Amino acid sequence: MKSKKSAIIWRYLPGILISILAVFFLSRFVNLKDLIASFQIFTVADVLVLTVILVCSLAARGMAWKSFFNNMSFRDGFLIINEGYLLNNLIPRSGEIARIFITNSITKNDSFQVAAAIFFERAVDLLIAAGMFLSTLSLVLELQWLRSTATWIMVVFTLLLIMILLIAYFSPTIETFIREKKFKNELIETKVKPIILRAIQGLTTISQPRKLLPAFVWIIVTWCFWVLMLFYAILRLSPGAPIWWALFTEGIIALGIALPAAPANLGVYEGTIVFALSVFGISRDSALGAAILMHIIQIAITIIFGLAGLFIHDFKISSIIEKIRGQLFKEKIRNQEY
Image 1 (tube, rainbow, N blue to C red):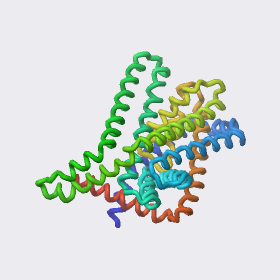
Image 2 (cartoon, rainbow, N blue to C red):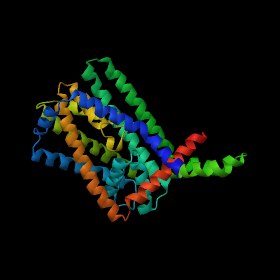
Image 3 (cartoon, helix red, strand yellow):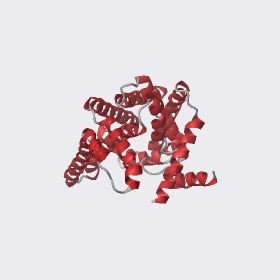
Image 4 (cartoon, one colour):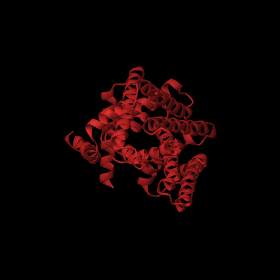
């Protein structure tokens, strides 16, 4: 039990330290009085608008998740997404594991099938985030050659995604080949082969165009709402700002929150927004005020819907966290073995 706890502590210690450093530097470069004054820029109506846009993004994400599974309702898809975000707010990077457990219990799909859906979702997220960042970086730095470089990078990302989808599409053929193949090594035949077969079977989730296309569209819609939410906040800070400011900042946020961090990406989320908006001449105090406001709205809404989801799906936070800790401990042991 002690080793289990220490493994989890060491896993999250770097992220906590990064968040502490982010908060420290933000506190050094921001004036408290100006920060408090920046909150007055946003009215109650602004908070309501930002909240509505966020809920729309969560609904779109729920529709994307629902698209992967035939026996899932929109309500379950929406709630599972929020349950994942809720767990991320408690334990960094745990939302995906929680979604696998919860989706598996509701739809009875194999864990590998659920994991494949998450993989596709994350791959599309990466493609969109990279596209927004790279396509606007040339405008920020005013270097024309970056546009062609960005185009080629996007082509490579797209080709990699297409290659994965082709493997998924031909997964039945690949599965048959591996199933009929007899390996001389007993370990490979009895231990490794079954795992590979389950993983290939899991790809069936992303091998059907009638599932992938709606999911892909709804993921794009989700990003549109995320950009809209950020753009609305930017316009309150700098009226007349072009929308590509929001595209660039959203790309920076995606890169920033990919770093290890404390629960809810505390400090890192705010730091990336302050850094990105300062490039456009927006004061650090105003940028931090907007970042904190948006972060509070995101955390509050996902907590409300996440707790509602756990109640409706009859899950306890403690039981989910225990499963997540067990899974993370297993990953730690596997990494040490290799």
